[in-house]
Amino acid sequence: MRAYELMIILDAGVEESNVDACIAQVSDNVSAGGGEIKAEDRWGKRRFAYEINHQSEGYYLVLEFVTETREMGSLERLLQLADEVVRHKLIRLPDHEAARRGLLGDGTPLAAAG
Image (cartoon, rainbow, N blue to C red; front, top):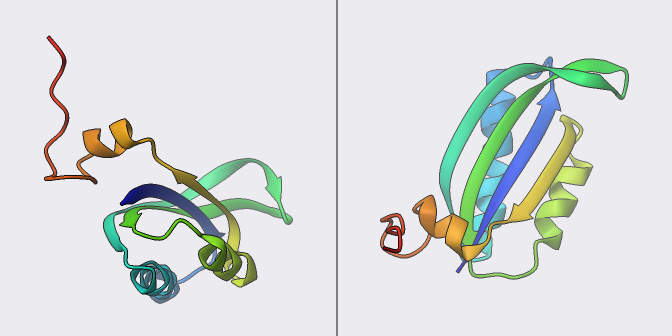
């Protein structure tokens, strides 16, 4: 299994139902690849450091998930084509960080070496 963290910035005017729909689309895409969303963190509206597409704020959403697939092209394409997505960033978490967050294995964090 591989662990990923996905940050999505949605249009600031997005309604809560659209946020739920975006999460559902990502979840469907991840589960189609044999994966599962493990954590969802809604940061809400935040101000940008600089304007993006003539907008000064956006709705931030962070998802952590694990999946068997090594190819994330379909998820990237889904996010690029979504009108409400301003920006997104998908990173693969190193195994030690994923284990620390409880995303891999039995869910217990790694013990400090002593």
